[in-house]
Image 1 (cartoon, rainbow, N blue to C red):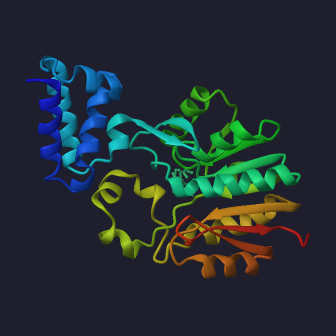
Image 2 (cartoon, rainbow, N blue to C red):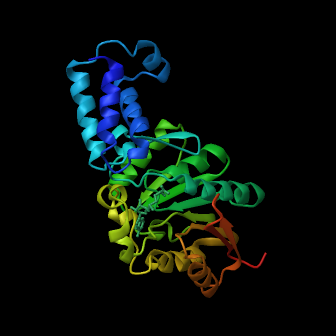
Length: 282
Ligand SMILES: C[S@@+](CC[C@H](N)C(=O)[O-])C[C@H]1O[C@@H](n2cnc3c(N)ncnc32)[C@H](O)[C@@H]1O
């Protein structure tokens, strides 16, 4: 069978799966991953023979995708804020909308005394590593409850040539005696009640400890916000990613715990996505 035929067969098979709209793109992406080639090769050499072990491995990757496994876990790769990250099922796949959080953090850190930054629930390390890459004079710390996630994050820091202090523990517990200019977090915020309505990709493949946070999705914010108040400098900021419809509730928590100047930042769809608040009045 020619390479081109193998690709078309795989795409046809994926059209019967959960994402028929992405079938051709996914089939091509998996083929390029497995052969280590690029699209130019595919166009130029598409009539070459395709068989043996590579064809068998390709077929098995296509079956995993057909079952709903996220393409990023199959290839083990994702790009976040222009940087390459390794991902495994131990970590949440970093989302494009989280780039808004990083963008806001860079703007705040460059304009204030955010010399020490802590990323809570770092997962793959995406946020902390992107910040370390762009804010070279700031010192980055990151925590996570999952040792397995921290192993991936450490690997990603090394891969991107940045230095981040990774600590294992509950929220800000590992740094309770320290002080920071910026606490940043994309914590678990999916309400338990939404579990059945999540896509197979998210529900069956991503770590549930990275997703769910009690009945309304607010449990982690309720614990994290008062902890952040204690470790922040008087002029420090907290930056939180929030889920759909959570802006008012999280704003009330921030104000209730004594934060000032709460700002709601929308994503590209105009949906409130990030909350920024200050520890002191100015
Ligand atoms: C939504 S994921 C975010 C991962 C990464 N920051 C990102 O944006 O892609 C939440 C992360 O918080 C971690 N986590 C959950 N509960 C935690 C806790 N109590 N303390 C520290 N980390 C926690 C999970 O293991 C997971 O890695």
